[in-house]
Length: 270
Image 1 (tube, rainbow, N blue to C red):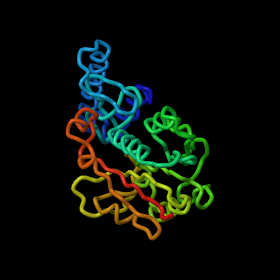
Image 2 (cartoon, rainbow, N blue to C red; image 1 turned 120 degrees about the vertical axis):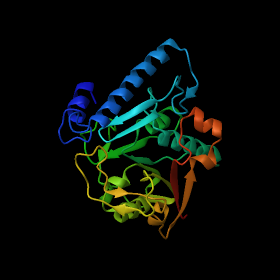
Image 3 (cartoon, one colour; image 1 turned 60 degrees about the vertical axis):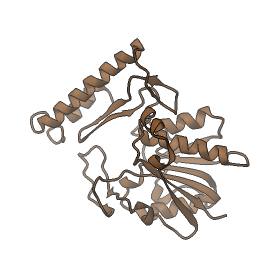
């Protein structure tokens, strides 16, 4: 988003959680984090410090950038080159491990719902077959979908997709069960679904919530550690992969991946 549009929608909109005259603390935090991003860019150009590395695109630099939105600031999480968050970097490392473990050929038919730029980079640069990108609308050009599709009624035939990526999508859809059933339906026997969702800190049980159009995330769900139970289905095996249990402490630091970041692999029965 252009800087002027971001300022207008975030700091100068009275309905925004970071409105300058209503929420000055949040607005100040955003300005300070933006200033730090600018200083980090200068440090990278000078090449003085290169202690962090992105496993997706190979960038090395002083630190990852801050994520800024009206209601949230996440420090040192975004790669300035490929745009990956720590969740993307963890997922990319997991995909590479899976590819190394596959005895036969790599998957031929892959579909990504709202596929991130980081995953697109991986799939386009590592000799994998075409991954078809889909989204429910064309407004956000970041995802450049090949076709439009609603995950509640996926425009895909039964048993046709070998790998399906669904990262930070399900929290936006009230009809969670329908979406999970659709993912299971379109997967080929033996196929994999890679699923990621955010967790709400301190929440013991997942719950559906009213979508707030003035919040940056527009979530319909707040998920807790019981998420894996919500997607359990007869017909596939669900495995939770937690970053702190899969990666070394040095990898977590160097790649800026939170140790509690996680994803779920859902493997459909053959």
